[in-house]
Length: 477
Image 1: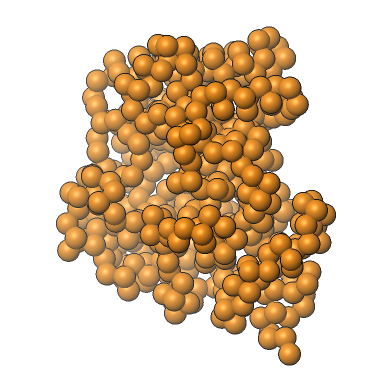
Image 2: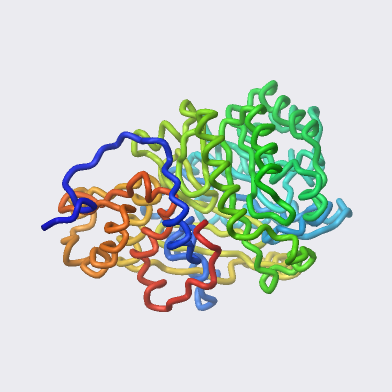
């Protein structure tokens, strides 16, 4: 007899996000975030610049007018946040960024010349994102030069999403107005926590007033979306303290809120060694903080998109998810159709066709490669047919919380029960716990399972299953 968890039928209606502490504790294992599949730890150095050039030439030959997405990594920061796991360069010397932008322009020119010598024939850019580090470390003339160079190399679509990450401690209303005049229309504002004790423990002192100034300036200057980033599980964080932070952030009324789980892995990231282990909240408190956040965001009207993202019901992310048009890439969830991503700067990761590519991680390596007129790619991966099929399955689960088996079989020419017999068997315990429903027509992540969608996706990760390398990743919750 079929268990209730495997019963027929599913609905696209979204009930309030279910939070089951017992199930979260049971399934809170380490796992990928699936901004790509295969995941970046599968990249290898046998893949090099020549392979990237071949991928660019294949695009030029077969998909020259397909939309593009651009990412630029700006690594510089004025100060060090102890929790940070990004590839960054801590400096107060702004001369270093001027040199960096000149070299990024060289990389852009090399890639653009391979894709299409005539700029008028280049594909439209649907998305641009500046991340870091702190992109607003750049002086205004540097930012103008960078954005101007990108626009000359790759014409932007009229409705292109142009986003930037901002540290409110380092900008004012005039800077936000300048960014708006430069073409940015989306902004991500780092907050993490407003509690003074937490801010001191992570070396990031940031007032609510500084943050409000940036948010209000973004709205006044035509930014169509304002995102705020929060982190739970930081040192000296308490349920009451984070509750107060949530109330203050909700009062700012951002369009989207990212609620990240802090992973304390000082053996991997040296800055985290400055955080005292005894200051870390115990697991029970961290779980209680998450439960409170989910409750408060739900009451405030935010829709759970997936992973760690919440959005207002009218936001494009929420609408795209409701319409089954949501995608996931290296910047997280996206409303734009999946497209090739060209990535520039140190450590930046791009995707062209069935190829992933990552640049060298240090400034010296980056400059040396470009001085030699060589692309700075140092590792990557060429996806197999099996990778492409599994990437689609994982994307559907992560974005739609549902996989339509007949449609999937039609897209890929596979017999799902045969191709994924091991995965269907592995789903049974999750179904017994009410995290998924599986039948002949679909796999659906239930309301109870949506917080643990990474756990569901991991079952379709052949590389993870074969190497049992889950310990390399952050915890699911």
